[in-house]
Amino acid sequence: MTSANYRDEFKSVIQKLIDSPDNEHVALTNFIRNEFVKSESLMDSVNPATGKPWIKIPNGTATEVDSAVAAAKEVFRSWKNTTVQQRSTLLNKVANLIEEFNDEIAVLESRDQGKPIGLAKVMDIPRCVQNFRDFANAALYTLSTSKILEQPSGKCINYVKHDPVGVAGLISPWNLPLYLLSFKLAPALVAGNTVVCKPSEMTSVTAWVLMHAFKLVGFPAGVVNMVIGEGRSAGQRLVDHPDVHLISFTGSTLIGKKIQEDSAKMNKKVSLEMGGKNPGIVYANYRKSDIAAIARSSFLNQGEICLCTSRLFVQRPILEDFLKSYVAEAEKFTIGNPSTQVQIGAMNSKVHFEKVKKYIEIAKAEGGTILCGGVKTVLHGCEDGYFIAPTVITGLPDTSQVMTDEIFGPVVCITPFDTAEEVIERANSTSYGLSATVWSANTDELLNTANELRAGTVWCNTWLARELSMPFGGCKQSGTGREGLHDSLHFYSDAKTVCVNLAAKY
Image (cartoon, rainbow, N blue to C red; front, side, top):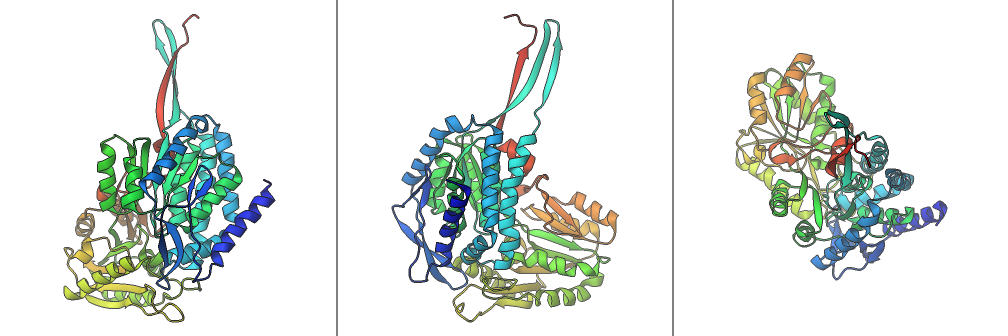
């Protein structure tokens, strides 16, 4: 198939989903051996902005997972022997195809997840393209260790060969669906593994579109497979399957710990990126021009980013002025139908909406002060949608559930502190350790604080500035392992040392 033909076919797949009327729900399928396979049963997927079903998705079973794993295992024998150049070329073709239809795919991501369409256009879909492109190109220039060993009998050369692991099970979350699925797929595939992926059943539409891209650009049948379904069925079988030797999971700490326990029984390689309760520390001499960035770090994507700031520690002398500025900034965020040009869309699901709402009620019951935010009613077809405005809470102790639990929504608690030593201890007094931010005009203050924080990433006077070559992951209950250009390629391969006696006579 020529590139022009497969672009037309890809466009028609996307357009069919965009044009799907509310009363005629398109039914998605699983993807096994390059075939779109109807599932044994279907379930509704809800548009968070309307609160109504808009598409049908598979309710994947263990049998369907077994079929996908069998396909991946069979083709691994040949796929692992393809060259890095061949795999890189295919991934770049996927990147190019996704990039060409950036705006159209963003429509689907917004409708399925609830995020503003503008955000999907400039963050989610471009990052998916970058993931495929960067891993495809980085793998071409990965260096292996080698060394000459001198010994009495002669010289030996030692070198390291990075072998693919086998069938990789990839489980991705609902908050950044295509963004985070591609962050797993790209390194797994370029390293020579075959994959079975399970996107979140709440946001599987763009993953299904992506499967068309893999098939159209020429990936061999069985290299990439996908089963859509619930974690307790499809996800659990993927974790338990004896022919899946590697699991990469992004999601909640509760589920991540169970995956780690189950995988340990078979000694599987596991990478876990889990929850966070990320602190932001604002010193008295912070740059007031950073107030918009501090608010953005709390509320982007409705606060449904694992790296969002949810606890703000503000040095006492500036607390009153900071609160006025921060609340004013929070109230500037426009909230509404995510298909329009708003900054805050809908919470991803009714269950999650109720969870976030519950924590706001807990804050009130514990004597906290709600300075702004709460449940928001949106009109024009979104009356039944799941909307919560940026919510700012003060007056709660560090021991409050609202200060300790991962809420994963547009809810921020602000509390004062006096000294650097005090705030570092309080910021670290959590079971999580994913990320943190520090805001100060004093470089020593920034670096001394950053060095003492127990977190996988600390941003100083910025937030969400990501460089793929840097390791990404969490400490404590926030995760196991690191992801990134180098770390992911190591995770998705096994290093093997080969020693050759150069003096041997044959």
